[in-house]
Length: 310
Image: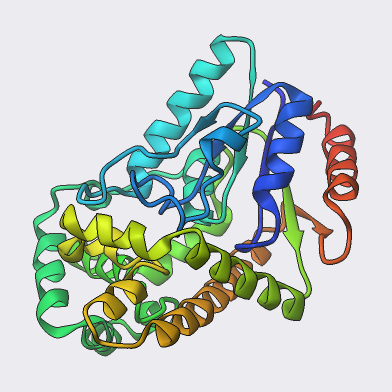
């Protein structure tokens, strides 16, 4: 098997455009590694490439309904099945995404403990606690019993906060698990290309992207999801862009404030993505601040060529 190209980076860095260009040149199929693009009906707010504009076959999009639980362990099984099936058809797979754990789950030999699966009673108990007390109180509770793990998790990343509690119940630590990720051997050979963008430029791109999402009908999309019962769903309803619009619809904040909150949360998320990816020394970075996508594609192609991935 030739090394699998993996294109990573923060939101709004141009990953999808680069992935499509490379996939088109390689004749490859794309595996999207995005923990929110897996949800059906969450299209605008997760920046899915519209079906009519896709240049390649996509996998990893629209896997489950917003009310269905999902995990990195499930994505590991799914992603590897995609790679094996594509390989049988004598084609290549290219992975693109901003969810670092999903990429590593597929590409590295990571063994998920049983608690990472769905239908976990411990998880259900803490999800109920989250509903009753809120995200900040839940994070403070984690900080009081496992400060090292809490320091690695944003208080509003409720899925990881709950995961940390699950690990504690198993006598393990989220902080220890995160440290162990750095030394796990690979399951598939890969060539990792990261797109970096100047911070100020990236912030401007994020602002424009959020404005475009609103113009494209994000509010209507959220209203439709509310009709489906997304309000009571822990994971999907906490997605950036959705929880803020829900708050505006329900009168907890103005729409202008919601839009600004989305922009701020997205910028913070991009910063956390870069922190994650910077820790992976396999990633070869391309500065995509000023270069057009044709130039970025050319440079990425050279990286693949130099690493025997073509």
